[in-house]
Image (cartoon, rainbow, N blue to C red; front, side, top):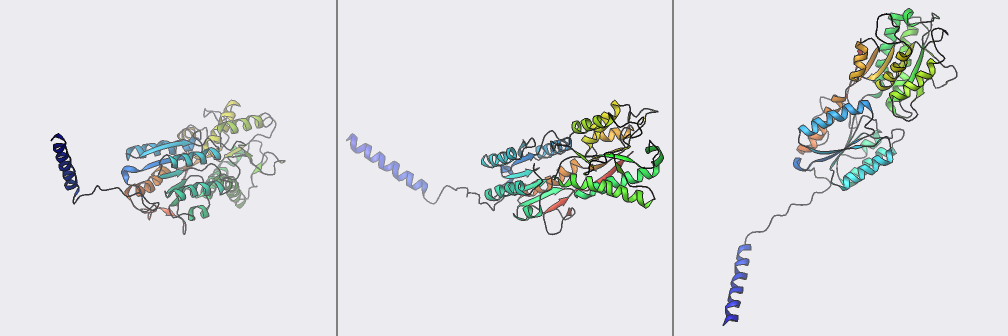
Length: 370
């Protein structure tokens, strides 16, 4: 009897289970295909910086952190520390760990290989990638429909710097020409070999200044070391660092002085960090203190870092070109927001300066002088 009762109860339970399942089926979330954009709540951004130690990049990173946090977007920052192999490993690891949007400040710029590897990694994972600040080749950007670049017009900073220098020298020629020989002797501090920004700034700052000088009947600038055919001193570590410029300038000032009649009369630097490093060495030698009676050697940089702008206001530097870190971050954030909302990567950019035929957005520079 007991066995019969148990069997009846079991049969009833099975019937109820079948009836409960009739006409309903548990909905399954379809797997995301490579062409689908992650929903806003799922956005997970990997932001890769070539070097946290770079002063300008720090301004971009701080602005990006604020914007991403404000939008409630999950993100992780990665420090490439100037090592391309490290950065590529970080990118692959981030993808494995669920990053579905990459924002990359590539380390290596002397060839397109590293950027192409990063782009291919994103393409294979079916996720968008935005390069920024350090120029990547058009072919890299065009190799993937969900790839873009946000940066500046690299030659523009060099042209602006050269124009500022030429104008200043023509207005203050006799004061700047410390030894009265009719020629301005200069030193150029280059950030990195093979970097587009460094190449153009090094070239056009001098060429455009020379054009203004010679048009006014003045001789072209003269590099301080006649044996240096390159006519620049480069940060051998590729870090655009203040320390590199300080070390170079300290060595130069050991033999170049007003007393010897061969004092450096103009300093041109590819960025503010190097410009400020040169100022530090000049101040140790008694120049550029900003105090009444102190001789100021004109020093020009690029970036318009707060500290450099303050030095300009204090009479310790002469000029810089603003590379807008916040503007860079805001432009990148437009593309991030597009992905967050499900729009195409390059939507909402019609009012921006976009290159013809390639997804590259240019953030404008601006001149800063006293």
